[in-house]
Length: 500
Ligand SMILES: Cc1cc2nc3c(=O)[nH]c(=O)nc-3n(C[C@H](O)[C@H](O)[C@H](O)COP(=O)(O)OP(=O)(O)OC[C@H]3O[C@@H](n4cnc5c(N)ncnc54)[C@H](O)[C@@H]3O)c2cc1C
Image (cartoon, rainbow, N blue to C red):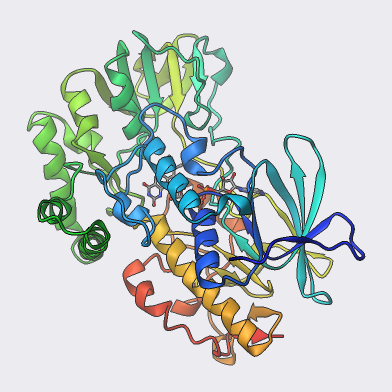
């Protein structure tokens, strides 16, 4: 059982002190809380979450059809079996997370409606001072913690990203961003244009298409999609054999991860054959007469942006049925009744949905200081995408883009708990990463190589992100298959770790 949180009444009345403060109660924060209770049971901690409930992404996004595009065997935690179809709705994911919280008695650690505004490190006190505001009462609160575990995700939850288009204000219908889907939006028998063709558009369109008069997916350029049955054969077989669910979860995870790794490697080594496979799956739904070259054949190598999974080809089925269509063109300007395209074509719309992405917010909009000096993460170099030079006692969870985010939540948590236990054993109060002598001439590069992975929100916010080096220790390499072995083998006595 955890040590209870306590009020440090001596000198800092109203300041609550914990060993660890976790930012956010999304899949990362709840995972961090689970691992802390199980691997570091002596640590006191609190999870501060700005929203009214847990779930992060899965409670923020409420547009019709919202679902994962990863399978839940790997998007689920390694410690709790997923027992339903692999692609899950937001409400199924929230139920699963709710069970994790309940089964592990985590609710008492989570404070909702607490927005962290600043975090200041003091080397004298070896602690973080964290200021938070209660969104329900406006009360200002202060916490101190030896360790700060950032599970804030990568985008701003309060608003999505909408580009500026000429004459945007002239449109007389309704404009909606999927991140703020209005509960009262009536799309029945309406003409809807969805701008964008990422995972959000691909999920939303089939789920509203039957009710709308017509849905048009307007894209500047095509996106790669994978499609297949919403089922995993090996899991079905093992279930028929009445194998224990914990085993099914583990075996299915390994199977999926092995196959995903092989496919990802093929997108680099033999992109043409990977493209052929993806395209033939689309053609199987749309038939040989559909213009797949124009609408579903991107110019970039698969996996340079996330590949959304389309379960049971539902997007393609809506297109085939004539309920939805795709237009590949550019916006010239908005009109009173819709959108005029650069080709001269006009799209009529009652509702325009801007599925145009996110605002990158990799620091949870928290203002940081180190010993009184403002911290710019872009001035730091990342240690394996989770720690930063010159930033003591802080770990940041940034998951995978080509594999499920949660795989990294578990890996990073194992690392943090090992690090905290190591510090306890050695009496260290502070740990910081620093470039080793052999790293000093290392080139410093942007967080991600745009040749490798380049979605719009990353490109727009790259200047805000930490730098990476050219060796595994100093980059987030997006490779679970390598990191699953590298992380447990990290030598905590390596010269990259400086203790105090
Ligand atoms: C629609 C959608 C579908 C996705 N599908 C997948 C998928 O299938 N597979 C996959 O791997 N990834 C997917 N992703 C990416 C997804 O965001 C991550 O996988 C994962 O949910 C992120 O979890 P997280 O807990 O790290 O961050 P989030 O889910 O973003 O949660 C962060 C939490 O921190 C809170 N927070 C932030 N700043 C503060 C602050 N200053 N003070 C207090 N609280 C704060 C937020 O309110 C939020 O609740 C999807 C993303 C979206 C938007």
